[in-house]
Image (cartoon, rainbow, N blue to C red; front, side, top):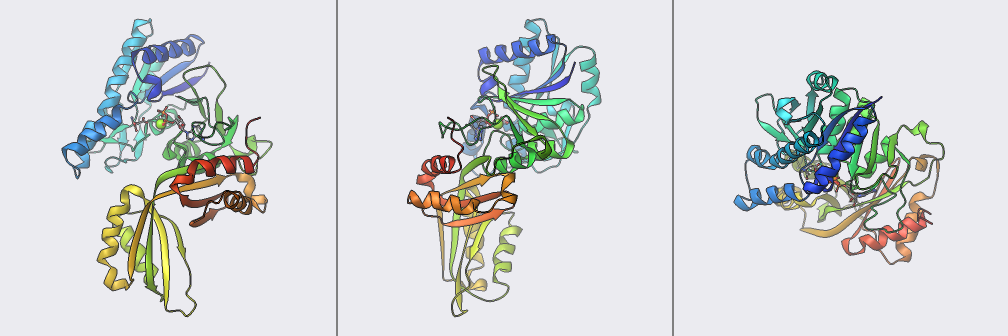
Length: 406
Ligand code: ADP
Ligand code: ASP
Ligand code: MG
């Protein structure tokens, strides 16, 4: 009836019983007349363990060898799922990234998919076989194994769906859809029936790890229909759709958070042209992404402070780069604070409604939560706060925007 890609995340293949349950689900969907390809992650925790082994061996290491190690978790689960499928009478065959091949660039540990050949997979599917594909991994032009960044199996699944022109890509995970915010933190979070690509892209890039950001980008660009649903029950999931498929647009549809931030402040920076260009130019040269930025003009045009955020894992490197330009830029002090969190409210309805940011500031203010940095775009407002208040902020905002489940 339909051509589907089914992706099972780490918890959904977390042990042999879960793998057998996933096999049963694949069989049911196939028996209903659908043609299916499956993408799997490593067992939950496996990639963390592999990552730790590499770091324990050498904190600074060759990313090409990191990928050789990190990609092995998925090799285990494709083999086991193929065996589990065969065991219940479903013809199945495992596929590593290089066997398809899933071609990527050579940005090891966060490689981008360049192209995927769908014809071989389709030929096998037409013969009634279920391809079981390793997520998260690819191969460079030179034949080296790559990985796609944490959470990358989502991106493999969407890319495979685009390559074989699937009718839909179903992402089976440990929650039954995309919620208004992380349901593990806010008990009153509500499941969304539908969310727009744009909102999902913002939610993912602002910290909601339910889908990897690049998978949403890829779904948007290749018009892949994506559904997020649970591998633990049969509840209806969340569909990611175009804006015109949503009749009633909420002003705010979701709230995301990220603890993966660090705040850096340069104090007493000379207030003259070219200073920001030097500071941020050097960080860019070092491949360090800067996110939120605030700078005030000084009263007497002599000195100012510049505050900005980087990924927490980049913070040590950023400080080193900044120390190296201290005399050229002429700032007096350098501070960093890793105990911050970014909380963001997201919604396409913001484009046509005033007062969204004000409601956010009022809700946080009434709880005594101080806002350190603010940034906005057309469909989101983000604030940086003390990490300690993350949960309180999420719960307060969730109520303030009327998102609480009844
Ligand atoms: P998988 O291993 O299946 O890829 P992940 O752990 O990567 O699963 O993603 C699922 C998790 O995403 C959920 O367990 C949930 O805690 C988290 N999450 C964060 N924000 C949201 C949200 N808005 N809706 C649903 N889940 C969310
Ligand atoms: N196993 C990889 C990870 O843990 C990829 C994924 O699960 O999507 O990041
Ligand atoms: Mg994931």
